[in-house]
Image (cartoon, rainbow, N blue to C red; front, side, top):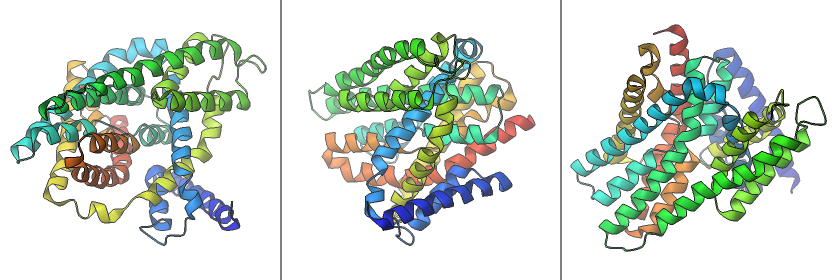
Length: 386
C-alpha cells in the first residue's frame, strides 16, 4: 500500500468521525453524511480517493454487510418472533407484491416491453439492510416499529432474491429461451445459504462465549464473520442470508450467552464507515441527472409502491394506524443488492442491458442518499404517535 493510501484512509476515518458527531448534533442520518463525504472525495467531487482504496470496496461491502446480517439475525429471537413474526411476514410480502404489480403494470402502460418491465420491478424490490439498520441503531429507539422493521429488512432480500429469480425464468420464457437455470441457481443461493448458516451457527452457539462470562471474544466474532462470508462466496450462496441464519441460530440456541453480538457491534463500525464512504465515492451523480422521464417515473412508482405495500400489509396484520403508514417510507433505501440484480439481468438479456444498468444505478443514487432520511423521519413519526 502506498503512503498516500494510508493518509487517505486516516482522513476518511476522521471524516467519518466528524459526520458521526454532526449527526448526533443535528439528528441527520450519518449514513447519508458518509455518502456525502464519499461523493466529495470521490470521482464526482475532488477525486482524492486513491485507486487501491477503491479496490477495497468489494471486500469491505461483503464484510460490513455480513456483520449487519449477523446483527439482523441476532434480533430475531423466538420471543420477538412470537410478538412480531406475523407483522414481519405480512408486511414484507405485501411490499414485495405491490412493488412488482404496480411497477410492472405501470411501465408496460407507458410502452416498455413486458419482460423489461418485470425485470425492473423485480430489481425495485431490493432494499439496503446496512443503511436501514444503521438508522434504526442511531435513533436509539427500541419500540415495536423498530423491532418489526429490523425483521422486515432481514427477510426482505430473501423474498426479493426469490422473486427476482422467478422473474428471470418468466422473462426467459417470454423471450423464447428455454433455460430455467435462474430458478435452480436461486434455490441453491437461498437454500445453500440457510444450510451453511445452520452448519456454522449450531457449533458456534455451543462453543462461543465460554471463555468470558457468556460474551464471545472479539476474535471469535471476527472468525465467525470471515468464515461465513468466505464460505458463502466460495460456495456461491448469499452471504447476507448465511449471516442472518448464523445470527438467528446463535441467539436462539446459546442459552449461556449474555451479550451474543456485543463484539460484532463494536468491530463493525470502522468497516461500516469505510463501506459507506467508499460507496459514496463510487456514486456517479451524472447518471442520476440523465434518468429522463422513465427514470423519474420509476422513482415515483417505487416510492408509491413501498408506501402502499407497507400500509396494506400493516393493515392486514392489524398494526396500529400510527405505525402502519410509515413502514413503506422506512423501506426506501436501496443499494448493492439492486446493483447485483441489475448486472445479472443485463448479462442474461443483453438487448436491454444498457437500460437496466443505467436506470438501476441512477435510481440507486437517489434512494441511497434520500432513503435514510425517509427512514429516520418514519421512525421519528412513530414515536410521536402521528
